[in-house]
Length: 355
Image 1 (cartoon, rainbow, N blue to C red):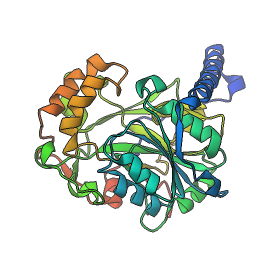
Image 2 (spheres, one colour; image 1 turned 180 degrees about the vertical axis):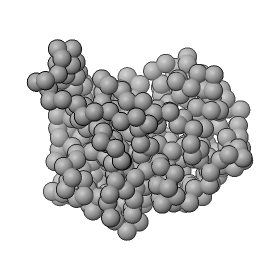
Image 3 (cartoon, rainbow, N blue to C red; image 1 turned 30 degrees about the horizontal axis):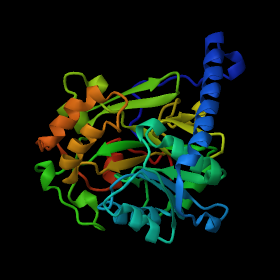
């Protein structure tokens, strides 16, 4: 992941912190308990479609996903998770009408729950996912993704997730961070077609390499990264309003953990310390974000009407409107995707000393 421009000294132990830090720690502890209570309450909104979790073995790496109408991406997404070493995927289908539910149900390594209730009122699906992680994820390394995210990391083709997680265990780390990298086509978005089962990066072969801003969020101990094509194309007049690009998708889960804001931050706070405070860079990955396929033009009009994807829907109305106009995100300064070594050379991910 992009290294911070300025280093920060390590945080002192809790007993040595000022009273305001102790108060903040208490507030986060209370917030985490509240999020867990929400998840327990929302579990009744989930209808089991097919539950194969009795086949999960100790040490299995688990995947978690909440989705709606992702039939075009699902075949390749699931195959990519399998190649990474995910043993079982636990999925929540939120009212799909395009066959996504059937694809999930027919996959032997997937357990599926369904709900037609509000994505937004479930903390954008996190209440449902948190319940499944509480119930099935504790003690496992858990990879939480959206259907339009493909995780890559150093040596991922030859060192699957069990090797990566063993390395993180050896280092005493319980999480790994990743930069969400927006991928886009060279032409207009509606021309970026991707038949089901094919690699979407073949249609979305370009990204922004260097227009990123990075801050540390002191309260969450998380990195806040903004930039990429969405910032320059849709939020140029106010880039601080652009979506955040830093995520913590891979965590050795405990039933008392909870994501705070998508997978951008988790509780307890120590899970968000995926950056180095002593110089250098920690082992990290990249989420290839394949949002900008041809369906995005039609979906944006639908999501603008539904108002289910952003807490501040008014703010994002202009963003959705711009997408419905079928823009071109490519510029002469765009960078062609060439694999993980190229991303590392650009400073977008790091081996962190993993040889």
